[in-house]
Image (cartoon, rainbow, N blue to C red; front, side, top):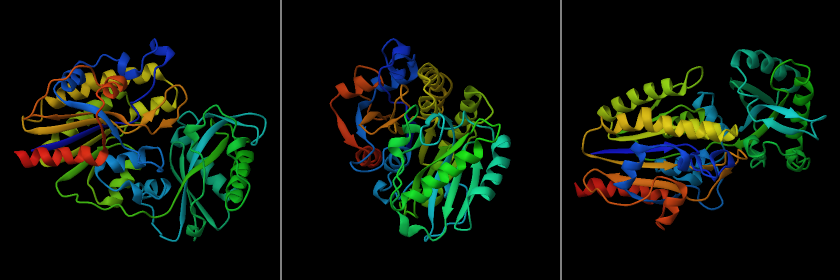
Length: 387
């Protein structure tokens, strides 16, 4: 029996005026997803345990069946995805190249958390100059592509935890309330200010840097036999690297979403032939939320249904279970994440059900069936045991 999980990153949302007061899932035409939902068990799943960071790292650890409480911050996971040297005594911090608006660092707002997806060929030489001009021997600033950098603080484990607000959660807000100039925090905000002063002189989309995701080495353990992930993000590369889980990547940058989905589809079908437990992760819906593009997010949902889902379901045989879920909410009106329970469906090819509604936030809430991510994973195992 094949056990398949399809995660649409950040697809869960709230009603948006640009979509006539509907969410992207509600507005989108999704005949394949609708047909699957009607034969499935539906409801909501809690992917972010209380007290843990609201974001893709914790949520995907949960949905993969790993213990999300082992999470120790995002940056070191991304560093693992880049195969950077891992040192348990160092502190790792994610740094975004951002576009600020305002007259000074302290009075700025983040206009784009990605400096409008700055091109690697533009950003990389400037980051090399920035590393030389602003960061001393205590730090190593590593460029990771597009707007992403990793700051390694040598022997900085003792500083953990360091509290930063993710850039994508404060788009359009004054950064002043999030600046911490006390204790361990001060040195990092001083570096952000120096980076801001340096980047003002460069004629590129990024005029500042924002740090977040401070982290130390986690332990991600679990049985990975017969399992594979298919993803395209640095974060997922890192989770799978640390866990020892095979990962088949598909690059999104520089191509249409439909072209990307066609390659993803081919790889997913091949993975089903080789592996028993297949975890398919699609990032686009989350990215479009962070860029405040609800219409484009809705169109991405339609493309996933049209290009990927229908063809995939038709090529995986007749002995399988499939879970479909959002990993967390991502609000396309603010760009922020939400940690409330997300929509899910669970389909068993040997135990079809009948239920009304569609795979939407409200229809899933209306089922009044709330489970944990561990319980969703257990459903797959129970279905296998019944065979």
